[in-house]
Every structure is written in C-alpha cells, then in structure tokens.
Image (cartoon, rainbow, N blue to C red; front, top):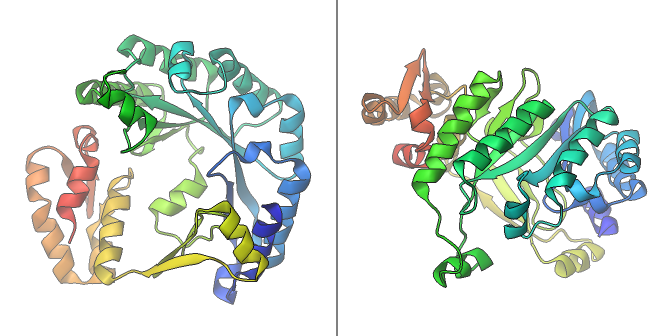
Length: 344
C-alpha cells in the first residue's frame, strides 16, 4: 500500500500553479498511526519531490488513543508531524464499549497527558454526542474533562445512523434505543454555550479551538481551496472538478502497478459551485459573503439569495453582519436545512 501511494504521488500530473506553497498535509481516513516512521517518511519524501512545502506547514496525523505512547510520539515529531487528531469519541467506559472502541476511558485520559509530555501543543480530539447511552450529565462530564485537560481543539459530531449498518439493524430490532433528536439538540446547545464560556472559538459547526489553534487543513475545505488526495477513496479538488479514487484496496494497488490512477471525476457546473459555497460558508463563523457571490457568480444570484434568506432572518436562524449571512446559535441546529433551502 505504501508503494502504491508513493507511486500515485509520482504519477500525478502537477502543474506549476498547483505545486507551490503546500500549507497542510493530513494523514487520515483510516488508522495511519499504525504506520512506522520509515513508512511515513517515504510518503512525506515522495510529496516533497512533487510539491513545495511552506516553512510552517501543518502536518496532522490521525491517531487512536491505544496507539499513542511516548516512543511513537517522539518518532512522529522527528518526521515532521506537528499536529495530532485523536479519535477519543468519549471519556465514558460504558459508551466506548457500546461503540465497539478498542481503547478504554483510562487510555483516553492517559494519551492526552502523553501528548503534552512529548511537547505537542497542537492537537485535537473527537467527541460524539447524542448517542443512546450518553446522558446529559455524562456529556457535561466529557466537557469538564476537555476543560480540565486544556485540550486546544475539539471536533464534536452528533451520532448519525447510516442505512444498512450494525447500528441501523440494532435499532430496527429494538436492541438499542433510537436516536433522540431532542437530546441531540440539547447536548449541542450545551456544547456551544460551555465552549464559548470557556474561551473556545466556535469557528465551524462541529469545531472549536483555543485562540490561534484552528485546524488549517480542515479550514481549507470550508474555504473551497484546492487540494490533492492520495490513496484508496482519496478525493481531490482543483476548483473546477472533483476526483475520487476507487475504494477497493486491491484494485487500487493493481491499477497503480500498471501506471494508472483509478479515479472518477465530476466537472462542477456554476450552480454546483455556488451551492457548495453556500453549504460550506454557512458552516463557518465568518458566514456566507453575498458580495463574494456577486463578484463570482453575478448580481442576479446575489439578489435571489438575499431574498431567499429573508424568512430565515425573520425566524431568528440567520443574522446579517455587513455583507455576510451568519447562522445564529439556534440556526446552527438547522444548518443543513437552511443551506439546502438556499440552494439554487
């Protein structure tokens, strides 16, 4: 797999305009923390041969708490990784077992101490709210531990049920309780209020950061910047089209061995680009700039969007700050619905 990823990097056509000033690198979409330093180094060196890294590049590695130890942390730092994203999900033992997570609640807490001891000041943890087992008191305890440990960045997601998954089947068979939308909303509101009170910047619907600790990599997605993805299922975006590699590992590696990158591509229409901007911009604290819509897409689109947003402003879901439409706290509960209603 490492051979294939390295070869895909070499096979990727890079133009002069896209090769310069790579600001972020993200190892994710699986469990990259099982890779050893030689494997990580091979990928990084292959990328350096194709791209120019900025001096202060942010290099993030996704890691599971049970993979994090003092030795690995030193090794990760030595190859240039300067940010970690840790899939903790919960600090509660019962809930972790229900999620079929390998790590324990004790490992969740220990790994944070180890990260700080190794000198990492830039890292994020993932937490999930709204699960059947998570009471409001336990959610409060999870957040108390975030503040107690002074974690610099938090990504929080509501539990969702995907069709044909084990959780979907368990709910259908009444082996576990269904998702309680009211409880999810209540826990999300509590999250927003407590994070704000603790001094965190709620800079995107699911993301909270201490001042200066925003994820530069994830922010690039919400700002519609171009990016390259390498490996099975990886996505790339050049501003006009999206590409995504096939998901099957064996087929991916066989295709790369033959000198071909196995991908599909979609060229975006003007309407798709506009709708993507509406969807991503509304999720951010900066909001949706209608003057930018006028500059890029024309005054007609700006006027239609401004008119369509009227009912959401009247209902207290959106407020207008200068030329920007920004979701209110209540509006953030309905972010997807508001965005889809504004789509062209």
